Length: 613
Image 1 (cartoon, rainbow, N blue to C red):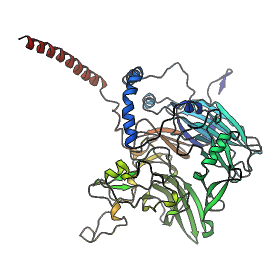
Image 2 (cartoon, helix red, strand yellow):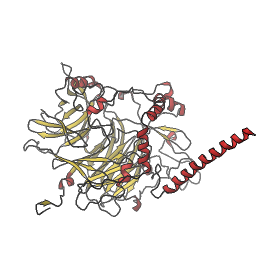
Image 3 (tube, rainbow, N blue to C red):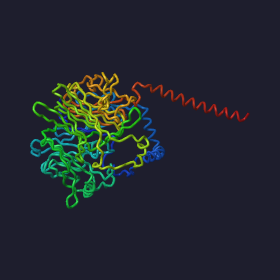
Image 4 (spheres, rainbow, N blue to C red):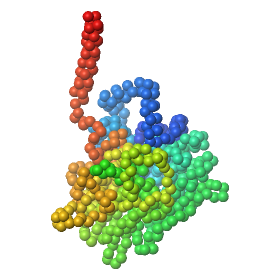
């Protein structure tokens, strides 16, 4: 809106066409050069890492006393945002009163989004302030028929890294344009044209030295930006930056550890590839390893997902009520594929859980009467699928959880590794088959998008975030979607007959375990509606990111409307309540310190007088 030559308000309509979003911390380092300037530390684990951290603690405390005092002053003194800086907000937007408190607890993050209008936005999560924008020019005629012209983005190496760079890929004349941006400011770091036979993107993989999670070993002059591997829709392999010989050598050294999978919804086939080298030793092509022909048996691929939050920590075990341990089947190469098979008037769904490296089908679930639309989400060792059952005129949710068929060796084996070392490398070809547990529930409404919460250490129980077709956003505790929930004993079973259970005895719940009995209907409680009285229309995607508090996860949803909210799956167990009486606490501590000082002085004088007697 313009009045008298002045821009009074701006409404960014491009935000209604977001197709990709990611969180990025505003406390991250600025560039790859800053990361390379840091000294390289030897990677150790287990007891050795804990001992090294404890040994280095006194040195850090003695080295930075001023920083410690400043941090303490910041903690005890509430911080207020500088009011003189004008924020660029959306029309009718109001800064939440809790935004300052959220930033103090690690929610000071940017939400970087890519829109179908070829425009990138960086939005401050707690205030909705637009920090920077970037328009990606896509030349007319550079897009292939039936393909989207919207740019795609990837954080390199990941959103969990101490610092990352934003790689933006878009169709261009003669191939694909690649641009590295600094996520905090939107500043362009590097740009080049990738000559490809197809302008459509298939996958982006960050390149890191073998066994490393950082860029140490590459000199900043040889790698001005984070290197990566780009695979186009025609199976062409491109190493970027293309003019760096050291990056090309890095790609050749790590080629035997890089794999690629592809879900082709037009041919109804799932394929797996390995990266191979040419005669000069450069990694430039894909070699097909396996394929899963689903179209040949009359099945149609509806959805496919990989586990979310693989960059963050997780808990690899589940502790039962009797203190015994169940080992989760954690495989970062998992791929869940949902297909539909229509034969005559009957339809049914198949859920495949596949190892994307070897092509082994780890689990296949058959849902009679199920049909699309299907929404999948996977995390840790479980997969959840929401679908429609027209035969019974209702919506259902199926959960599959994978465990290792491994006996409990006691806490000694977990802490010290059972004599096998802290880090054991296994090949995907030699992993044991998991034990799958599956259960189905009735859900009252349809879903347009689904996500899962994330925390730094994965200790807090996860929650499933659903965008309902009723224009609400709903949170469902993952503990309710537990395939180990026991079936209630009724009739002859309650009278003493032998109970039949589909759960193996090793994974069955114990009496001490607070696991509720199985109830088919999942209730939608009004207190679990995250959007409260606000309606959110046509939400297409939900992402989440950890905060500094283990109890709190940051959730962002996008579609026709956008929303942001913190989610606490197990309440705020690691922070004091807002109504806590800090004044009384400080007075109590002060009284104790003054009493200690007075008592010390009196005691020393009395001891001195006793010696003169």
